[in-house]
Length: 447
View 1 (tube, helix red, strand yellow):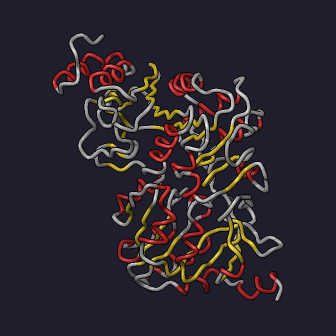
View 2 (cartoon, helix red, strand yellow; view 1 turned 90 degrees about the vertical axis):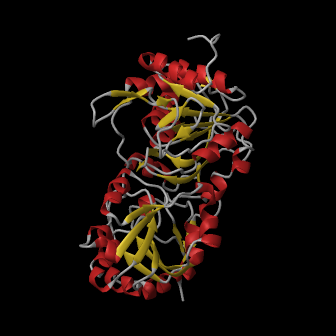
View 3 (cartoon, helix red, strand yellow; view 1 turned 180 degrees about the horizontal axis):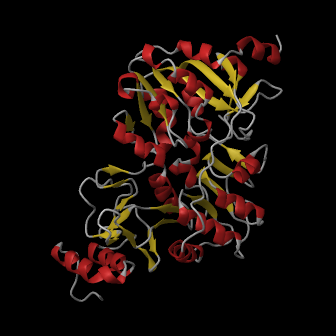
């Protein structure tokens, strides 16, 4: 039987395919851009027949149909590996939960730790001549998902780019249980508008630290993207990419001729990433592009792999930072904002890299929408309930619009002095007073 004959024999409707889901099942919806659309809608229509169906996924672009049914908590729960803004709002519904992870370990969680999956359903690119369906921009942990799934349903969408890789970037026809076809636009990540003056100021301070031939990792958000835009306009050359998330900033750099990758010590001349999300320009660039390498996250985020890349530069955001150098990138107190992702992996990996640096960046202040007051992101201690994403021992460079400091090897009073120096001037005296109360301020230290 030819691959196309197998394809036709497994082709069915979304409504027929989702009949395999039963009450109490664990179901996997894949990841980010390849979250199913038609299968999600078909499963939602069965809600009255189902109870306690537990779904895993993450980084949603819109609320799934299954999470919009009446009395949703009786029928479905959403369990997210890394929350987008959409999922953050879903928490209030009482049926959405976060699973704390170290992202580099996620494939192993599936293989060794989590409950077996009865059904996995996710979008893929159209089948190639050899019977393979590309995972598109979401290789991440999908091979491990498929290994643990009893039933695999692929939703073929011609708008999913075919992303080339090194390993675990696709699934073969022989592994697939059922196929459905559906055409819909791939989810795009809002750009958030042009970079602010603060973003640009922070980006300039970071770009000054990046040498020719460096290898880059950018996190999500305005500041990392501002760094990418500034690099695209700079004189830097022969840069490489090894990142968790591939974002528009990398496309800008590539089109500006900055990303030769010739200095990479591994995966030379290839831009390596675990998943991608951004504009249509990004998906068009990734499609069938041999310069880009889609890979599983236990490779891209492995500290031991990152450490092999000389001059590795890791650039990520924070919600707030305290005077001890602890970084919170996940919550506002107990209010959930995001997930741990791979930030700590890259913070550690960059420091282990020869000539490597990790940068945690944030604006010095934010406007509290409830009180209308300006508040400092640099705090004496993190607020109760705030999550420590990066421990004080691992933090390397901290950057705000008021400067950059390297706190590696600094004692508690040196850390306090350095971190206060990049706080907003309006809050420095208050921070000095609090540092004194905590016993981490020297009278001889400069204000």
